[in-house]
Image (cartoon, rainbow, N blue to C red; front, side, top):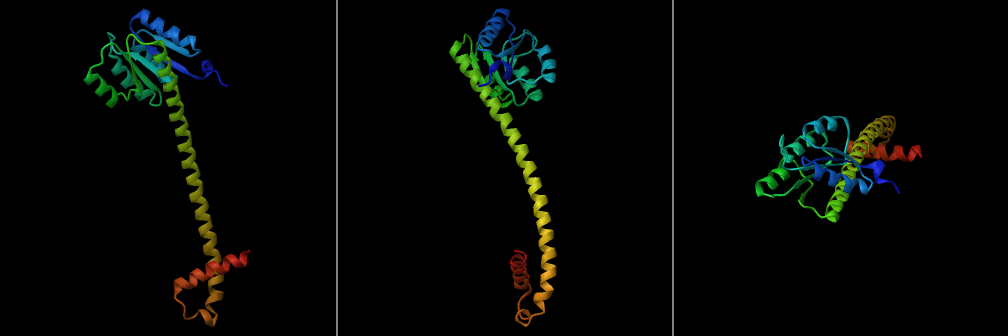
Length: 196
């Protein structure tokens, strides 16, 4: 069983120091690695250098709204699950969060510890699925490219076999009245039997 500490990095940006400390302590108690910042400007430079499974941000910050920070973080780390902590959920905030920031979840302040931890676990699981899906998609594309090359080679080999068998079949009186497509099909079938 893998440990969460070595596997998952969480990034939290909360302006109020006591809220940031409480969030950090709660998550570290669960063995998550947490990078905590009290300002949204520095985190953007850190996000350029490091990958995180989950990015958590408070909505109300003086330099930048949490939603704006999460929109910017999405550009840098699109696979990360983004969570917005807010005391006030307004419809425009929710719509913008979904449409612009692709926020994974909202956490209302004050949060329940169990709800916070369940949300973080689910956000990590989502991140794992997204990154695993990307690996599978890349592997599928690679295998499709290899398959296209192999099909091309088989087509060339079949064409070479047909060219060797077709003249021999065409000379037989049985095949002289046959349409060319039928003759080509018969040559392919004959070539398969002849090669086995």
